[in-house]
Length: 142
Image (cartoon, rainbow, N blue to C red; front, side, top):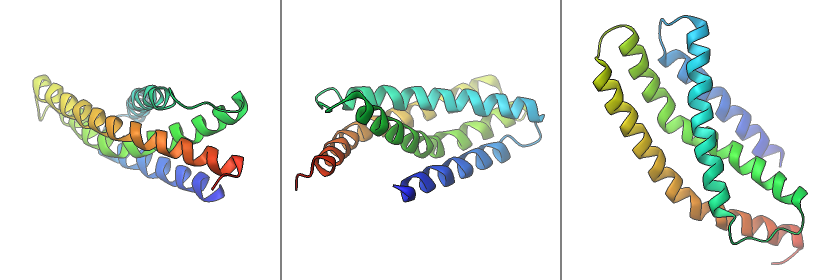
């Protein structure tokens, strides 16, 4: 378990640093705001995916379910963020520097949403398998 927690911490560190640098010369307060907004969107999408993936899984109690949910949602939020946040942040920075027009940023956002949806569809099955595997290990089944 410590390896998973360390992986989550490293993933978020890389994600936040990469996204921060992708926002370029923007003021720090705006960078932080954009990072928080993007993280919330990715977190909510990942949380919904977890909810869909656990639909057929019966946990022995709510404590185990909350523990598994927290680990999976945090891990996949970081991974999903790495795929979309730095790319979108470069677009936000380009708009801020007036290197692109708003329509180009909208197209980047649509592309990021499409990539995120594809990732979430693939992850849904993986999360279900992972949850079943965790439950088997916890219950002592082989």
